[in-house]
Length: 210
Image: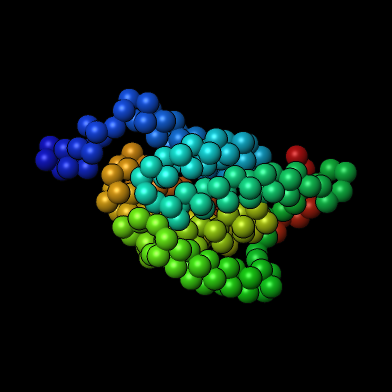
């Protein structure tokens, strides 16, 4: 067991204290953000913005350029989602949880494929990424997940579950063990989030008071 822990944490001997604390802080804000998302709490967005902003820096130095760009995208979509979630249907009701429309599902499929093709090409040919295709794949999954979350559709959780599960071993491989544990917890929280949102799916408008 000791050898196992030494293996996955050994890379931190080369990190500065600042970088370790920064990764731990980003992880904390990320976990809090997902919990807020499960509860449909608007604080998912400000806490998420702190998490993603820090990871832009961390992922750049880790050489995970696809995930770095997806975090920049998260920042933009976080601001957009913040606006959408606070939009009122009328004077007292907010946007409910819902299923994706047929059009949104088609857009999601197109975004997934196009993002993978574009990002994998860029990473493989114009960066020093050592895992360009898996990096591009997780990037495309998270790209769609964040868009669907901003739209407040339950389908976002399916993409988070798949993307988070793939990211766990990827981040261990890239020497970001603390972050890999974050994504392990994210996977479990995404499953819980899907179950919780499923219960609140298409609730009557009178139950959407805030």
